[in-house]
Length: 209
Length: 209
Image (cartoon, rainbow over all chains, first blue to last red; front, side, top):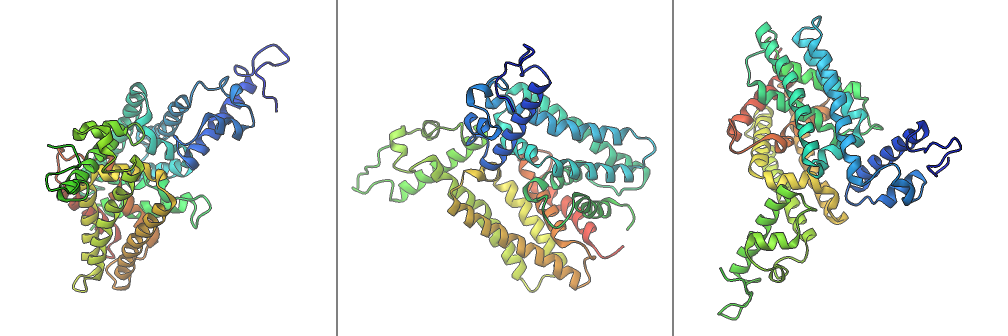
């Protein structure tokens, strides 16, 4: 694969389709290195070497290491937030089915984005305040949708009376924490993990004694 | 407060009682700064200023920033591991009471050590491999004791059949994750948070349908 941003058609590879592909490749390599070595221990040179380009060329694709964190954070939360928004908005689902769907989506999101989430949950202090604000709004949206599902379930009689905020935070923590222990080559698939956690959670909130 | 390690009785304050107190003060200030600014953004000068001594004197108490992480990690895990060991060893307790006790101890440990755990859970990559090994052993001990409580509860008929490893990891994650959202000046005391989480967890594992 060519390394130079100058291409035969005169466009630069940083703006064309090939440039986008290389940029995606740079981000993926950076994510992997951040997870393995930590954000701070990863140098621009490490990222360039992992992609097989020289450090000078790397700057055609990203301005700085800090630049890489923002899309990482937005990707991690954006995907999950849009999934739970779709579940919450689906009027064909009962609160019980919505809660099951939300836990399942959350577990799958963590399992599918272990690299992204490891950086996100470890390195959030490195974000510029503007990005932190976007990040906080995404988290608040997610929490609000999740919280509403619990309240709807109490209103419908499916869920018991409970402190919905604490239960919500407990469940979100349980799901987020997968990033510390879930291994793709482990004993269970993400679906199996999700089923086990859903089982515990649904018993935990059910109004049936 | 005096800054010089030289004291009137000829001993140095770094080895005497006053030295120990100052060292504790240095560690506490470092922990607070690590949490506020992050481990990497905190300089030795910041720590010295927070304690009100000059940077040169600081080196009488700690060799490097890295030096501060090891006691931080060991403190965070050691306290909780010894508590769960005491609970697990108490033959007067049923598995139900042991599990309640373990969740309560875990929630209290997180709430009482927010600074320590924030550093611990964010900065574990910075540890030397020797410290990581100690850390891993402590975690494994903790997990083994917790896991055994769940298995004992199934054996006694108090808990339902379940994947005890996933349930254990879900519960530990739920408790650990408090460090991200629990605020000492918030709506609930740690005891109230623990009660709410215990209520969900006990319903989640109970064999009573």
